[in-house]
Length: 120
Length: 101
Image 1 (cartoon, rainbow over the protein chains, first blue to last red):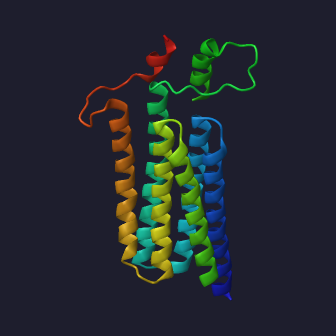
Image 2 (image 1 turned 135 degrees about the vertical axis):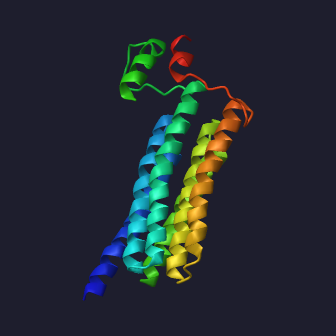
Image 3 (image 1 turned 90 degrees about the horizontal axis):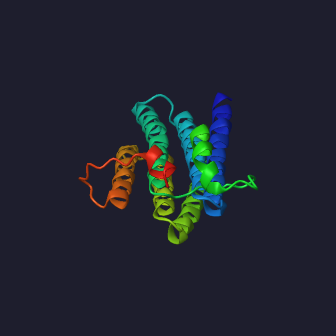
C-alpha cells in the first residue's frame, strides 16, 4: 500500500519535472529577448532538477545512493542560479540591451538604466 | 514504473533538443552559452534517471562530477567569450559600463 503511494508520488514528480523542463525549453526557444530567455531557463532548471531528483530519492529509499542524489540536488541548486547570474551580468556588461515593451513614449536610452537598477 | 522512467527520460531529451535549436540559432553568444548550460543540467538529470532506472548505482557518481564540471565549463567559456583570455584580471564594471553611453 505504501509502496503504491510512493510510486504514485514519485511518478508524478518525475513526469511533472519532465514537463516543466519542456516548458522551460519552449520559453528558451520562443521568448523574444535574451533576458526573458534567461529567466525561463533559470527558473525552470531549478524546479525541474528539484522535482526529478526528489522523485528519484523517493524511489531509492534510504541508502548511500540517496545521499549522492541529495548532493547532486545541492550542487545544482547552488550552481544554477550562480551561472544564471553570471550570464546576465556578462551580457549586461557586454551591452546586450533588454527590449522595453509597454513603455511607449519614453526613449529607451534614458529609461533603461533606472529600470535596470530598480528591477535587479 | 518503467513507463514513467522512459517517458520522463524522453521528456528531458525533448528539452535538450529544443535547447539545442536555440544554441544553433541564438543571435548572441550568450544565448548559445545559456542553451549549453540548459543541456548540461539536463544531462545530469538524464544520467541520474538512467542510473536509478537501471539499478546501476555507480552512474550517480558520474552525474555528481558532471554537475560540478558543467558549472566550471560554463563560467570558463563565459570568461573566454567576454575577455578573450582565461587568465585576464579585468573585471568589467556593470553599473558604469552602460550608464554613461
